[in-house]
Image 1 (tube, chains in turn yellow, cyan):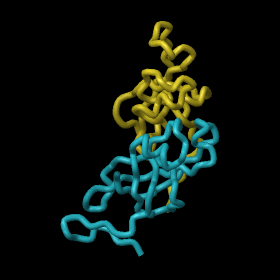
Image 2 (cartoon, one colour):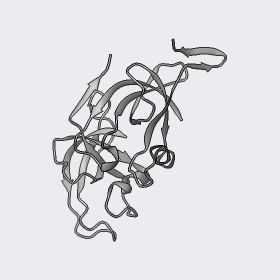
Image 3 (cartoon, chains in turn blue, yellow):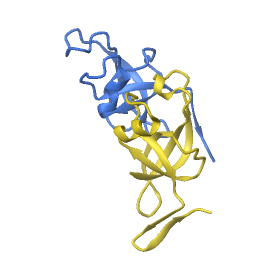
Image 4 (tube, chains in turn purple, orange):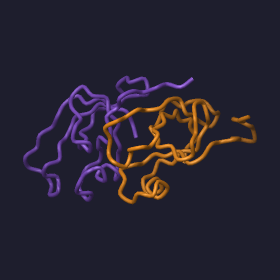
Length: 90
Length: 97
C-alpha cells in the first residue's frame, strides 16, 4: 500500500459491468515524505468519502477490487483509507 | 518477501472495514547492504513491531489475507516478522540487539 493525494475525480457513464455506482478518483502516488512519485492513476473509492485534496492510502493489483461492494470487477487501484496523520518515529 | 525498517505509523480513522483496529506501519525497504533503497510500503502490523526495527514484509494479497484471517480484505502488504540478523555475501548486514 502507498500514500497518495487525491487530485481529481473521473466520471464515466459507460463502463464495464459491475462498476455502476463506483466513484473514481484521480490520485497522485507519493513518496514517504509526501512528495509526488510517478504518474497519477485512477483509483476506485473504497471508502466512499475521499475527495480532492485529501491524503489517502491506496492498494494496487487484485486487492483493489476487494475494497468494493462487488469484488470481481476490473479495477487496479483503490483508495482504502483516508490518512489523518503520518507519524515519523525516531 | 522483503526486508524493511519501520520508520513511522499511518493514522487513519476512515478506512475500509478490514483496516479498522489495525496498526499501519510506514516501512522503508532495504537493499542487500541494509540501506534504504528509496522505496517504501504501508504495511499492516501482525507481530507488534516498533520504531526502528527491521522487519520481514510480505507484499502479496493472498498471503496477507490468510495471515489476517479475512478472505476478502483489500490488504496486500503486511509485516510478518522481526529480523534479528541479516547476512548477504557472507557478511552480516544487519544485527539486532
